[in-house]
Length: 225
Image 1 (cartoon, rainbow, N blue to C red):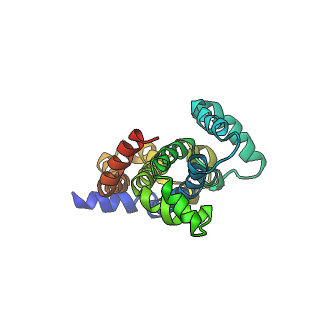
Image 2: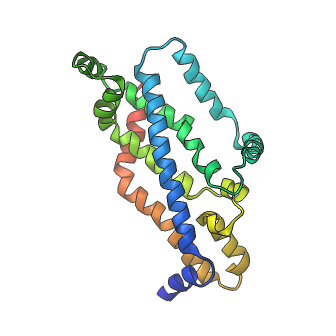
Image 3: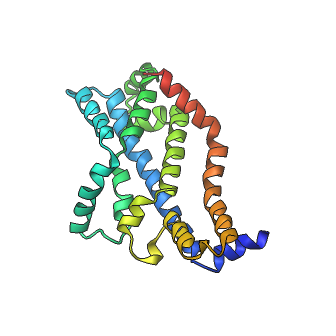
């Protein structure tokens, strides 16, 4: 029944507010990932610097740490600087890079011919100009992969909003959906399923429209470097 979608979304919890919160956090984090990871990947792939490979290995080594090891130190840190019950613990870290995205973009950037960089430098282009006008336009498949992974990861993020956010008006959809299940799901199963489908729909749409670039980005990244 189509009325289940309307009633489930409007009659129990303020899902419009949760949807807006999740959208703001997700879009902000995707932008942060694209900027920070592109800059880091460009430096590792195209610039010459002493110890560059060592620091790249160090970045990859952080991927070996399981989430359970870092969640408590991060919570203590963010609590002491007064970031509890705010979006800052959710939105600031993506602006400082994400190891997997840095690795993915770096591998793709290394497959772009260096002759393009040399020709641009002869014309007086700076490193940032080369990144913006040459590297990024040629890296749309890899960037699309970052966007899709970033969207899915942030849209479905449950643990960190559950840990840091206490105020109802600041909560996100993943936690709100679990709240709905605990408070109303047993007696209103049809509404819970309708709301769950609405929450899932943006993920399906993003992957559907970006799947061609996503598959191409994964394939080319695996072949280059």
